[in-house]
Amino acid sequence: MNIEEIKRRFISEFGATSNGFDIIDLCVEEAVSTVNPKCNRPGVYVYWHPEYDVVLVGKSQSNSKKRALQHIKDNSGNNVVSMNYFEGDSRLRILLFNISEDNFKHWVLALEAFFEWNIRPVIKAWRIG
Image (cartoon, rainbow, N blue to C red):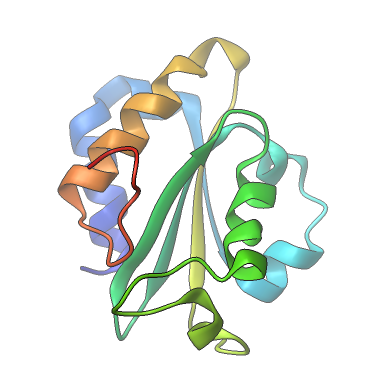
């Protein structure tokens, strides 16, 4: 599954609600250095890599970029792949689906569950099942 397909599934499922989200596509280096305030909002993050497709999905109800980057530091993983495998790989992308207004915060939980069940990350979230 490519990045455009992930975006398409989001828009198809969430319809008009998708307008309450900003979709930001960054490589890890860009995520570390960006000062774009839209990146530091509540939302859902999706790690994508051309070899593995969707690697990891998660959410933060305060700062999705910060939480996404913690997975690299903590070396999240499973018996298939760990995040340190991607160290220095510029092909690893972080897609941030961040809310543009606080009254959309409840949609973050729904979007994380939708992605976990429908785009099937390699590293599963333990709380979703």
